[in-house]
Image (cartoon, rainbow, N blue to C red; front, side, top):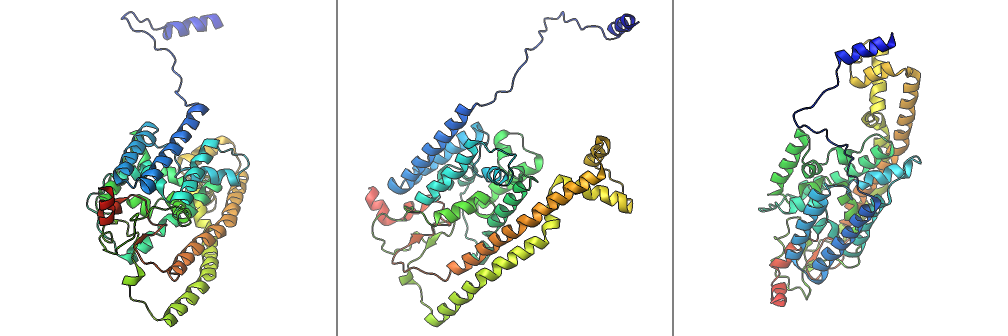
Length: 410
């Protein structure tokens, strides 16, 4: 009986016979990079950072920095397809710190730490010529325009918010939002969703007039670079000799990162300065506490980023109000044999994680904003033009406008 059924199946589905010269392709395995190649990427990263630091601080060569950008775009961008990425490594580190069941690769740790060490030593040289996301934008900035300082201040706070949320979502095992909404990695891999291609193209078009829009107003790793670079020991300077305050460099910086000489500014009365200093100092703890309370109250809404939380709410809505759960995840849940109690229990655990994490994120955001306002009241006496070590991308454009620099190079 079984033999007859097998024979009938063989007659119904006969073995295909290829008599036209066709050859069955051999089995192909994915071409995965081994650990040796991962550490080769780390070596390339260190070499690129070292060369960019040398071009920015010792050689003082804008062309050298540009060529490093071209190399980084070709290697870390199109050849390595934007991965491994220092920007996205923020999420790997966050997930590993708050989840014992996740082991972060050593290469990801190194890609996260090494650019920050260089920022602490030499400023934002990673942003200048090593980051492929910055490089693709740097090469499209042809006609930069200035943005009003008040608008610039508001937009510059977004990377800190993005950083806080990306750490929160990664730590709660919800999403890697940096990778999901990266506008350029999909272009590097030539397989981006249509919406992300449009987003990336719009950023590049905007970058013609507003240099590095993603780096300045979105990049979460750039927020960390901003903080570390403020304490850099050897930062790029506008001129290697004594500044003559000719003001030629004042308008050349597309990032508004050049601090003018105090000798050229009108000083306000000390009483007003003292009052502002005290006010902003008092605002720091107030804004820190307010940020913690605000984010804690938003934790239920933020937890909806997690797919299990969304599914639990969809099932509960169907159970309590009769609204049909029609999503694919709901259909898969109903066929999985998992009980509603288990799903709701998982939802409760995830929401608890968000309630623990959101106050810390709120404190970070409030403290960052308060410290930023307070820093405006602290002024060191400057007798020459200097770069703002936090905002400066170490791109070297100011070299080309300094007359003293031109005389030395000749």
